[in-house]
Image 1 (cartoon, rainbow, N blue to C red):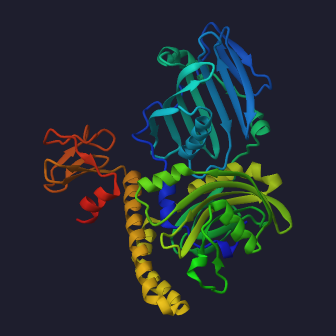
Image 2 (tube, rainbow, N blue to C red):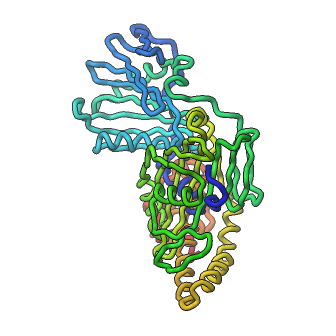
Image 3 (cartoon, helix red, strand yellow):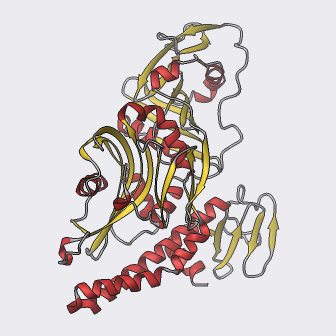
Length: 503
């Protein structure tokens, strides 16, 4: 849905944060979902829900209900006496990312209903397709509750299961609750009719010509390659699309007018999207169905050391006219401001299709967006070439406002230096997470750095290596192998600059 004018380059900051923003602590335990289905135990009765979407076996006296909500089917089986519950939801939504993104969306909705929601023991698999976490909250009528949830994404279909009981009773009730969940059956065709789901189209790998990014596309789709991680992919009829790109906007206070350049004050993503698409003549009659602020990602970026300027992140669901046809779109947008106030950048990942086709394409769209990856070697080259691009930008700016060119060059250089430091630190975090690594600082050894990987822990000063448990990435908790001290993890930008970057 978005053409070349608005599709240029998705920044390294955006990609790194999309990859790392929702990292939960630890590794997923062996049991990532309820046990496999077994024959229903004696004493349990078979129930078919109201619309025959689910068949479930529950103890006598229990009740099972079904409902539909935003493209998902929900099952709730509960004991009126003990107030224990086993729940399942299956649906399809265009989440950017994976099960972690789906978990964030689920928890955001739950947190809006129950302000005292607390999450503990959150764990994920390395492929980020499964998440498990424990939690508690206070229900207005039922009182204090505790629960465990499992969330998984396969082929764009999100499955959420949960066991829940009054506080202090979950462990005792868990065997019965897991037995109920293990015997749930989703009736054939029920999900398609209730949630509008369909199968993921066959996908084939695709890589941009400059090697900057790779992703998967349905067979027969064409791709306009703009390099630097930017592209527009569309179906043979040019009605459905997948786009990654960005647009640079000049701030009015810069006091210049450049032919073809957009001049506007800093805007959040939904306002920026309307401005850029309508001003370029790409869409008309744009109407937002949902604007979902993602303050969680903004906070993660701040904790990750991003200090180049203000950031706003939003998920956008909307309808608009494209080439005389009513279409529906989903955009994950980032507005990156500048501390200097001279310019700002809008970056996005977008999927869109005609309104009558969008819901059926959601699983395919989800699989496509999840497949998007930046090439690590290209990212390194991109950073190395940054100085040259900055010099070119400085020359262009100087020709426009030569009376204060020297001041602008100094400001742009300072902004670039700061941004590059942030990018380096974000890349360090992302690489460590993907590879299963962690660095630690020993105060008793004068700041010596210990490096943990999937096989063990190494003293970077002496070369001493401690192999296997408990020194590998999964099990090592930071206790110095030689001295009685708890070492400090390198998880802040300040510590990284002092102990890693400066070495």
